[in-house]
Image 1: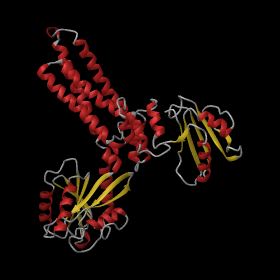
Image 2 (image 1 turned 90 degrees about the vertical axis):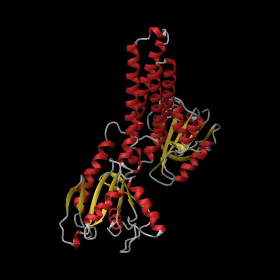
Image 3 (image 1 turned 120 degrees about the vertical axis):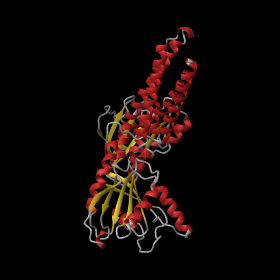
Length: 454
């Protein structure tokens, strides 16, 4: 990290202001050469920005952050000028004429912050997640991770493992005859508690897809029940083709919407029926699979058709469906038989009677949808929310696996050295999450996805 790096941290293009960030030992020289003045640390100073011929390039704000009290832990200078992209590029070219300064790589500022122990790896990833957040839930979850909430959970578990390892080391100093049976029971109890903590952490972390990608609302049902019309209505635009011909929808159609502060991924599916059409059958198979992948399943039926037969077919389709999926039966086309919109219950499944075409009863549906989404809001906006990545889940699972294997081995052999190895492995997996143990490949993979200037 001997090089001093520079990048524009604001988006390219003209705007209200541009901001340049310079990090490294040459930052002070930049302030002397370009601003021609010594800046007071962490104070905004209005300055002229001079080119190499001592002519004014721009005027703006300079802020000096001496190490280690800066974002990267190095000397950092930030320059804010008038938001003309041409001006920003001229200033960058001027600064690059100073030897030992180069354009930063993607994510290099955050990588230096990590390497200088200003943030851990979870917090570094949270910065990227925060920038790319697409809902209120994901923003709040990313901020939780950035503030250290996720790291705190992981570090508490690591500390518990270390405490057990210290206890084991003390027991290894005694002969097997002197090993206290009470201590053995304490080991087992402590290991079980850590496994329980890991399971809870995994449970919270596995909500990341809902937080990041949105609540999956799958619209399924039989042909000509109004699925595509419903999909288009909720999307507020025509995304799916609507006809009275059965089998019109043959593929999965996606759209993301915002509803009541929630990001929702809507999925329209093929009408489920028996058919000889090979292409339509592929779509029907996809629809059946997608049903089991939903967070909320809206299954549409035609209220003018045989209700008993439709319900029987429905229960065959959802056989063995996970209990976590919220199912709502939508009985559409009530305008054709003069039924008032209402909600009823059948075998613990809520049924909503409405008309999509005539927009009758939709306020009842929206009210009910809000109630279902409260479950997700409660989970997302709680104190324990953070945004975990796939690599975090993998390391948590591997740590749990090591502890389960160690617990089982301990029950059989009561061998301190063997259980110590399992505990060490589990600790290493958890250390990889926070970055106490890392490889350059992992860093390259993480920070290369950042934008330049971050």
